[in-house]
Image (cartoon, rainbow, N blue to C red; front, side, top):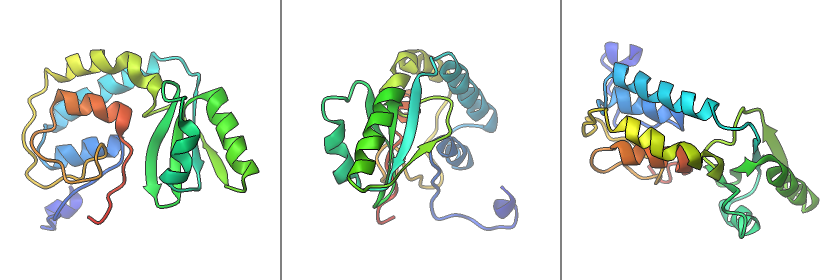
Length: 179
């Protein structure tokens, strides 16, 4: 907002996870008040979930990491692709820890993240319906400034509605490639 007050207008906006709510607010998708309502409800619902999850950075490409998650998709997922060799996994703590140890044995560095929950993982699934129902109360608009979607890594097309923000809780994984 400070930059906007100076007359600096962005060509496009992006923000990761909660940051995409900020980007959407700045782009006019919803008001500040509605953005705060959404993020508060999201946080409230997440806080009610069990704290049995974990997130870890695997310093390898998504292509290297994904095969290790096969068969575990209901408990662990890729939570973020922060760069070509920086992939975050999220899910059940014991499995994420085992996977991190397996990567370390292969000579791939890992780093556990200090988080309260396994964000953007299957452990978020129990809150998705409730959050989407809540989000349907919010009036969404088409962005006035292009937004790079965390869900696709591409420019967002159309109006990011309640369904979009539901999917965002679970699948905010992609970094912007070539934007």
